[in-house]
Figure 1 (tube, rainbow, N blue to C red):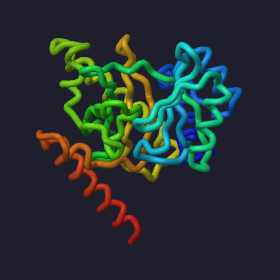
Figure 2: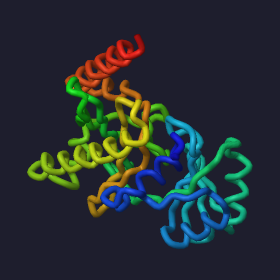
Figure 3: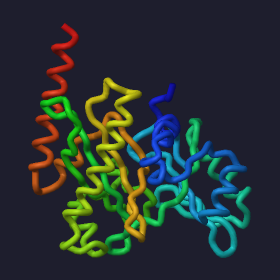
Figure 4: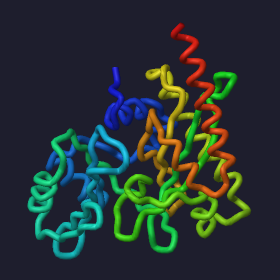
Length: 250
């Protein structure tokens, strides 16, 4: 049985070989695990297993002179990992924390971004990718989340400098297919959920990584785009799913 939290979902997705290759290594954030992953990847994220909106996330990086710990717009370099870990441990919320490989994300105008792929049950009860939106990090911040200041932008705008317009349609279909595989696999273990928001980071080799899977995805980020077509479809499917669930309870 898998819990509906970041670690539980990670372990669930890891069982599917076609998805496992898109998962950044993730473990409980013990000092030993953080040390081992930092040696291997040079940058890691420390995040609560329960939580949304990007709150409580730290970034730890190996830098000249020690370890840099970043949280929000605050940054400090410590001479040893033990000092940086102690500072993180004192300031973090009292929750179960995970350490995750830091993905060297693509950037747009020198700021990192990731993508939210929305997948929903359509009127035929089939999974359908209903939208993709980009999230551009605020200057100086380590997270891209909308409610932590991330700026919603069309995915094509953010990807264009790295992919080009000629390959955009094929690449978008690739992202949608990944979102659909995630949702179908998740629904085997969590059949009650009617929508998933899959957060995907793109590295500099254009490989997509599954950062997180949200079982109660916020739809408002799509309303922040000037083109409202995705938002209207997402809301329509959401209302239809609610109506079906309400009828089933009668």
